[in-house]
Structure formats: C-alpha cells, structure tokens
Length: 613
Ligand code: M6R
Image (cartoon, rainbow, N blue to C red):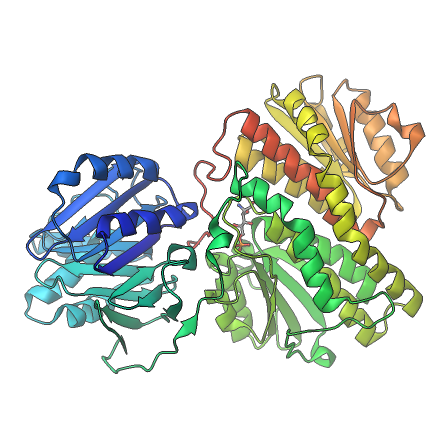
C-alpha cells in the first residue's frame, strides 16, 4: 500500500527513482511523484493515475532537470484524500524546502492538523501525510539538525509510517525512518538506495539493511548511519539480497499473473523435494525450524485475509480430518476487534503471502501478547509479521508481483498439507498406509498440475463465452468450498464481474433466487462423500435455466450431460483436490479479465500488500 523509494548517488536520479517505482507499482497506482534535490533547488514532479503518466511528466520536463544528487519517489494507494495530483506525494513544507514521501497512515492527523493550522501552517492537500511534513519542519526551524527534527517530529505521530525525507539545504543526505511499515536500505559503492520492498533494488545492489521500527537512517552517498529514536548508534546487520533480477521479469508472458500461474508446478516440485521425498519416508522438516510445543496445544486458530483466508479454510477442513483437533479460522480484521478465546494453550497460525498485511500482523501480535504459540506461514521471511513468530514456515513461492494471488495460494495449501501430514505422523492420527497414499498423491501433483495448464486453450474458450455476463456464482462442498470462494474472489478482483462463492447446500436457502439464464454457475466438483449431493445441487441449478459449468476431478460419464461446459483436472483425492481444481479457476478469471481488456496485474482500487487496517 504505497511504495516509496530514495536514491543518492551519481546515476541519473530521476531515472533511478522511476525505475524503482516501476518495480513497486503493485503497491499502488492512484498517483505517483518524485522530488529531486540538486544542491540549489528542489524539483517536484507529480502525476495522477498510473506511473506511466509520471514518466511522461518527467520526460516533458527533462530540460528543466539539472543534475540532482538525490531524490525520493512515491507511488500512491489513496487512503486519506482522493486520488488527485494535489494529494500525490511528495509533500512540501510551506517554505518549499523540506519534502517527504510516506507509506502508512497517521492516525492522529486530525488533532495535529488543527494544532498546526492554529500555528499558521497551511495545508495544500487532504492527506494525513502533510501533518508529518509540518511537524518535522517545525522542529527543523527551531534550529535542530534534520535528523533530530525527524526524531522529534515522528515521536508526535501515531499510526504507521515509513518516510523518506529530504531538505533543500542538506542535499547530501536523505533521512529514512519507519514504524509499522517496511523499509530497506540498499547499499552500493558511491550510491545508496531506500525502498519499501526488495524488487526496487534487485539488480542494483547486492547488500541491504532492513530498518526496524523506531530506527532512523541517515543515508549519504558513501555511508549509511542508523540510530534509534534517542540517537544511539546501532550496529545494523548487512544482509545479502537473496533474489536475482529474473524474479521481476515477465519472461515473455503477457502478465505477471499468467507467469505466476505457470510457475506453480515447479514451486510444488521444489517444496515437495524438501519435505516429502517419497511416499514411504517420514515428512522431512528440511530447513524449517518448528519451535512448537504440540503437547500444550488444545486449540488452533488460523488467522488471515483474502486468498490466505481461503487457504486457512482448506486447512481447517483437512487438519480436523487428519489430526482430530478443532481448528478455527477467522478473518484477521474480525479477530482483532473481539474478545476471543486465544490463550497459552492455543496455536495461532498467521498466513500471509506478503507478511505485511496490517490486520494479520495485529492479530498475531495480540495472540503473542496472550502467550499463544505463533506460527507464521509466509512467502516473505524478511517481512514484518515474522517478528511475532515462534516459528516460521516459508512458502518458497518466489516474489509474487501480480496483485491477484495465485502461486502463493498453491504454496500455502501445499505448506499446510505437508505440515498437517508431519503433525499427523508425530501424533499418529493417521495410519501409515493412509499417510503413504496421501504422500504418493502429493508427489503426483506437479505433473497433474502441468496437465491442467496444458489445457489452457480450452479454459480460455470457456472464459470467452462468459464475457457477456455481469454476475457469476461459484458453488462447491467440503474442502472445495474455499475453491468456490477463491474462484469468485479471483474473478471479481481482476475482471470486476460480480462473483460470489457459496457452499452448494446453501444455494437453496436464498441465492437460488438469483438463478436464471443470465446467471452462470460454476460448480467445483471432487470425488467424495458429497459428490452425489453436488450433482443434485447442479440439477437444481440446471432446472432454473442457468448456464452450468463444471470444474471437476471426477470422471463421470453419467454426469456429463448436465453441464454446458466441463473443465477437467486429473483424478485426485478430495482433500488434496483444491490444489488442482483451483488452476482452471485461476485461468478462467485471467482469460475473462484479459478478454475484457482489464489491467490484470493491477486491478483498480487494489494493492498487493494491504498495510492499513
Ligand atoms: O499478503 P497477504 O496474504 O496477507 O494478503 C492477503 C490479501 O490481501 C490477499 O490475499 C488479497 O486478497 C489478494 N489480492 C487476493 O488475490
């Protein structure tokens, strides 16, 4: 949610900033802006809408740009104030000398704004951010150093922030500071970078420093000094960047989403190679260090948002079956505002692709405060959420750029499957023969997934037929209830078609009233206890003249006539089937959205990491 960058060095500053923002575009695209410090003046360029508009503004002003030595940039996901140029960052102090970019939300901005206005400060935007400019400027004008002004200014702010701050009279440095929002410093010779996330510095630097909450970095061309809010010098760990530039390339695919969908079999193979080496071998923890006291655990709560919450739904279904333990799941945004029963005998699992989702972070923080054991399942071991973890289970899916989560979902399901099997083995809740069968089917998953992906053309032709519809319903039962919800979420978020997922048995309790020839229904079917009931539900749909599409792992000639279209995946046991059945649903959403000309990787109003509550 908003991305910020900073650069100080000898390269063309504007180009470096724009390039950094390009790789952070998944964090927001309501407006963008940069500020350039050239030792004699500050130049600020802003544009509403997508980053491309800022590229145009900068190139049409190319002649005005002198030779800046440092600069900061921002890409916005609007929270306070509409997506206008006026509200675009960077924001300037009233004397035009201090400038900053912000990611986060300043919760006490109203009180501060009233106070500052009384003192004569003039506000030029509707953002919460502008109070930060003025409180820091107020301190600076009292005569303290920029660094000290930042320390004193930010101590007045509550909420979340990552800032890059520059002053016209101090062109040799950029100040970076954070609280509850990510920020890294990229280190190189004769130049240094600041960014909200690693993609902005991949291929430019090899070493980075992760800034923690309450740390202030003074970033100069040739050195970086990090202190705490009291000014004490900190000895920060310098880490190697673990990603290569390949991960932020589309590799010839039209969109990152399509590339990421196609990466899934290889991700599965890689993860399985570490944890399930053969059907007759015990589950291997590999590099994962589980520091959990299973004897103490009386209940399990899985907390997550969006797609990660759907992975939690599948987990509940599967783990209760495999482990015989009660598993609760809850949207993090709900969990944090009620008196829940989490205690010292609880295991709380936070699932988050990004590890930066504010609601999930708050939830696991609360769980930790209640002495629960906390396991974090994330694709980003370097993210903020891991601070609250007793144990971390990395997804190993590689950086996911498209706003719509695809490969991370499959990696989440796989992680929860192998971990569930590991626990079942330890607690002996599954018979060895059953364990062997499950492992064998898991090992076959990558090849089966490849088979589904090779059927993409067929999926596209079904997607083309759905383009004319305004709404779609998804139905399923059992572990695939989550597939129905996830299929619907994927479709609505990237195509803007109204899509809703239901437990198929619930259809007759209300949603069936929506059915007619204008409401296609996508039924997700797997072999198992509820298959016959699913078919009855499909008959009920058909009787209401709705177009009916099956996404199925069941070979059943008798059922074929029921459906207008059938998207098949290879046969697979019901508990593992969400991993395969989700692939046609991802592709269906992708081709529908692309066919409608939507911006697939950057759907409107969304951002990849939701860092606000
Ligand atoms: O990074 P997280 O897994 O915590 O993100 C949670 C949701 O914001 C995310 O899954 C969102 O729903 C995606 N846009 C879905 O495609």
